Image 1 (tube, rainbow, N blue to C red):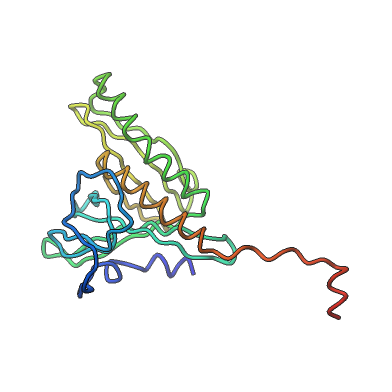
Image 2: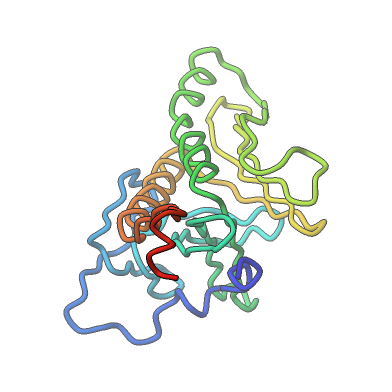
Length: 216
């Protein structure tokens, strides 16, 4: 099931036909807040489901957007699928990438993103300049088959940003987000997670051997 999630790309997120009466607005890439009532936003690349944060796919320089959903897994429980949607642009086809996390991993991921304003303030106040530091690991440790980490980056003018690095199957994907976008991505992930948890059926009670005899 998890492997199937990794194959979900932009085709399921970019809207080709917009539902009548759906709440929408133009994307504001600088807005840090997340609005779960927004059903889609209008971007220069088309309409995107939900209220995404905007980011950059490092390496290609393409613009991407975030989308979060949950799915149950029989072995790992509820999973968060934090996806990056890359619309077609610059003559290149669209695509996407997914980072699948357990509930605990998802909460760590969101917490790290939420620290971005604090990191940026420290960098600015201390005139840190060009600087990059891994802040925390979400999945695995460096060198493992799967490794997801969050890194803080400061440019030469001490302006901060966040870099998400995901290594899977020997392939590294990296994405850069502004400070506000990191806050929005965290809120989007948390909302999807808490909604999924609220909708998940409660676990069945443990079998009682004495009561089981009544059904023999």
